[in-house]
Image (cartoon, rainbow, N blue to C red; front, side, top):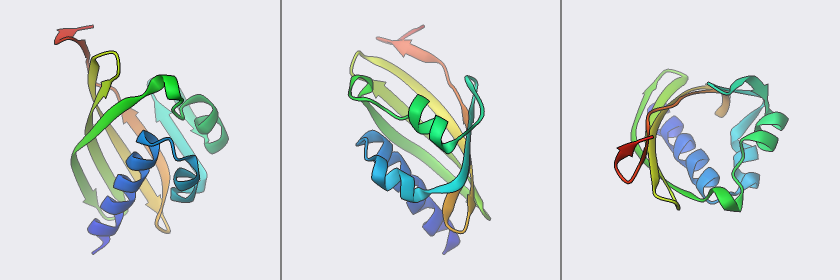
Length: 118
């Protein structure tokens, strides 16, 4: 049952990101949330929303390909397509505390434009 609950949280988080619904995202992220990527070193929640939250000019389609849950941790791999035709696949490692996302670590995949590696 925990697997399903955490998978649903992951799906809700990605849905909020894609629809730019910050209110929903804020309910899913722990107060002490941190975000790490090749461009960000454990930034806090406020910095994440300032720096990483989508804006209308960053419209993209996200398709979750796989969610793997183990205990209070999950991996999710997804394919993104931007309005400009760029595609990329990323993986995120998430941890959860009390049913909220505590950390996200993003691993960027290769980026393609019209099928050509960028």
